[in-house]
Structure formats: C-alpha cells, structure tokens
Amino acid sequence: MDIKSLCLGALSIGDASGYEIKKMFEEGSFSHFYDAGYGSIYPALNKLLAEDLVTCIEIEQEGRPAKKVYSLTNTGLTKLKTDLSEEPARDKTRSESIVMMFFGHLLSPAHRERVIESYIEHFRDGCTCIEEIDPTNQPYGRQFVRGLGLAIYQAAANYLEENKDLLLVNEEERDIGDAA
Amino acid sequence: MDIKSLCLGALSIGDASGYEIKKMFEEGSFSHFYDAGYGSIYPALNKLLAEDLVTCIEIEQEGRPAKKVYSLTNTGLTKLKTDLSEEPARDKTRSESIVMMFFGHLLSPAHRERVIESYIEHFRDGCTCIEEIDPTNQPYGRQFVRGLGLAIYQAAANYLEENKDLLLVNEEERDIGDAA
DNA sequence: ATAACCATGTAAATGGTTACATGATTAG
DNA sequence: CTAATCATGTAACCATTTACATGGTTAT
Image (cartoon, rainbow over the protein chains, first blue to last red):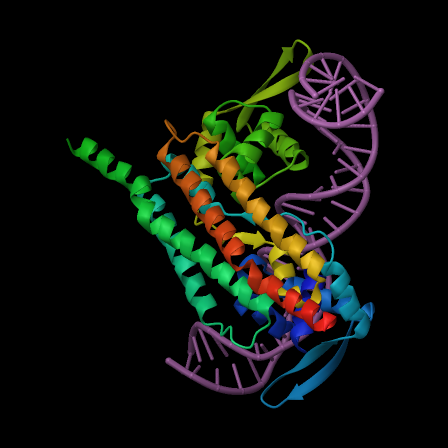
C-alpha cells in the first residue's frame, strides 16, 4: 500500500483536489497513522490518471487559482478494494522523541525537559484534533479509528505526564550534588 | 537522525557487531518505535568507520563465522550527543491495519475480522516482548521508554478488544438481513 | 507590509527495502 | 534432513522528502 492507494481511499469519500487530499491527510482521523506531502500526492494523482483509476476536471475559481478535482472511476474503486484486501504490513513507526528519551542520560537536562514537554504537547494537540472530528453519521470504520486514535494518544499523554519525574528527578539530584 | 545515529546509540550501550545491533533493534525497548534491517545497518557501520566515529575488530569464533565488533570512538560519542541534542522530528507512523479499519466498509467481513484480530495480537505480542525486558539497573531513560511502550500497547490492545464489535456487529446484522 | 492560505507541480537527493550471494553449525 | 541461527555484504530498486518555481488573495 502506497500513497496512490491512500489517494484512492481519499477519493472514495468524495471528489477532491490534491490540495484537499493533503488536508484530509492532515485533519482526518487516520492522519495520525499515515502522512503525505504535496511532493508525493501530486505525482501519485498523475499516475492514477494515467492508469484510468481516476478522472480529473479543472475547475476555475474566482479570486483563487484553478483547481483540479479528481474522481474515482469504477476501475479505481475496484483497485482500492484489491489493495485493501491484502494482508496489512506491520506498522512502521519512527519516533526521534522516544530515541532521545531512551538515551536521556546523554542529553542536557534542559533539552531532556524540552523533548518530553513538547512530546506531551504533541499528544495533547493530537487528542484535541481528533476530538474535533464529529463521529456522528460516519461509517463505523471511521468512528472506530477515531476512538483508537484517542485511546492511544490519551494513554501516551497520561503516561508521560504521570512519569516524567522519572526522567527529570535525576536532574535535580545532580543539581543538588553540584551545589553541595 | 538516521540509522547511522541509531547505530552510534546502540554502540553507546556496548560494543557490538552489525548482527547484534539488529537484535537490539528487534528486542530493545524502543524496538517498537524504530526499526532497521541488515541492508541499512551494514552500510551505516561502514560509513561510520570511514568517518572514524567507530572502530572495528574482527573476531574469529569457533564453530561460527567471524564477526566484526564495533566500538564507539570519542568523536563518535560526541557526534551521538550532537545528534541527540537537535529538535526531534515529529513521529512518523504508517499503519496499513488502521487504514484498512478506516475503510472497513470496503472490506469483506472475513478480512475485516482477520485484520482486527491480528492487530490485537500484534499489540499483545508487543506487550509480552516489552514485559520480558528487565528494567532493574537500567538507566532511567530506558525504564521510562519501556513503560511508555507498555502503556501505549496496552491501551491499543484494550481499545481494540473492547470495541471490535463496533466494526464487526454490522457484519452480523447484514447476515441476519441476508438470511431473512 | 507581511504572513498565511489557496493551488500545482518538478527535479534532485535521500534513505531505506528487497533480493541476491555465501556458508558453516546446531537443534528438532 | 530440514529449518533456524550465526554472520556479512552489495546492487538494484523504490518511495518519499526537500528544495525550487510561481503567483494571486485575504487577513492581521
């Protein structure tokens, strides 16, 4: 599954331009589990167009640039279903924040605190962002994923908040030691 | 931060061969937040060697192939600390399982159930794997990350277990409808 | 004025995965 | 006898990121 499949997925919800698809990736409830920039979305859409999996109409707008609105074709929907019926690959995560906390003893106390505080903020912001999505009238899959995102982000934020002393206390001890 | 930095980090814990570093990535407590294969580790180690950030000695072994054991140099440790003192990039996650659940209505009921059940198993296995790491006598950073991993994995597994009906119930309803 | 938003795209570079290549030993 | 573990490495391929390029509109 690559960004082409994700674009097909986005278009299965409704017609959209590349710019709008980017926003869906940023704001949708699975935005926290996949992301893509313009540099991958625009080429993906052009490839899908060449393969007849989507169609495109250019729409002139007053006061802003024209946009290209893409729609899923029947073949496109079939392709999406095929992609979704494969066995899912294992999750791939890479978190520099966690690497930094893991090697916390090699960081300056100030940086260590900055990393953890901004990581807490990251999860709190994520919660807020997910909460803003109205789950009513959405297909059960979207509601389910919204709930999962919230559960994970809340658990992470809570753990970090409740245990950050473990990472920061030693700093104080060291300060006392230095002062003595 | 790339795999070169991660290798420096691994070697900061102790001397190791490429093969052993891979294992650390697989079994360590941040294994769930970063991963790397031989195809990236071996080239990374050779680059680090060329930059004098690590040294290497070949050790002959009886009954098994010789191994190359790498050690961090002073410059290597400095480089690691520099890498760790940057601002961490945002987490990057991509989860095909979540994408599939999100578009659950486009999947066959059987596949939908398979995806969710194996995803639960994935998190449960992850918990077991983390629990096997003995946190005693480890630096606080490693204990902290171990706890965070457990918290997140447990939250995910619990949410999935408790709410999977949301994703599967519709399937039953449909079956009843079909039968009637 | 200046930043942010709307809107699309390309080219180069990066970085990582996959497949291939080799081969001895040990446990089931 | 077969699979797994130990052990290293390269080359081709792939996907994505980053930087560049453009330009009007709207809100502060």
